[in-house]
Image (cartoon, rainbow, N blue to C red):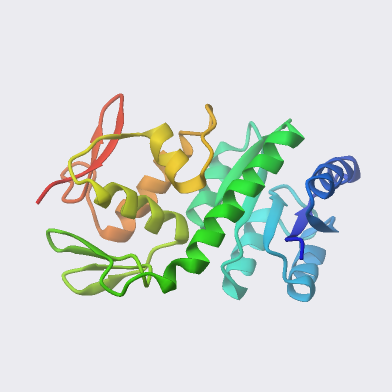
Length: 232
């Protein structure tokens, strides 16, 4: 059965273009042209992924994303204009999985949809992993099977992307990962120009861990290179 993608954009030309390429790649596509319609279609169609424009009539894309995440953890790829960097970062903080900047290559969008869905598929199979599959670094414990992180045995509320980033960093404490390596690890595909999204995800991860970037206990910035998990 083909994976179902909800495409939300108020420009009919963009919707037609994205729909053509996604259907050509074997996906089922449902569409909406404003924020209110997007939520209605989201509830009725239950898509596997949402491609969501930020600038929408009736209800903007950020409010739509908030509402969708209250309903489910369905992955979201945002469509943004180059001038919307602040909204883009807010969207990532809301838990959006990726973003694509307009004007964009439809082929690249398809590739990014596939990458996010591959990651979702890996997550859905994770509960079948061994119950003993845990990473421990100091007072930080990461249960890979249950996809749960703990600090001093207290659970930490993380989004899907934040958990994946933390798991990658904790797999080799002290090793410096470049932004491109982290992006490739969490999405399965690395694209130049998008590695700075990692900075936003790291910022959110630090906030969730209660980590001070100026005096980090967990995530250390290696200036000009990337990030590492501090060794205990």
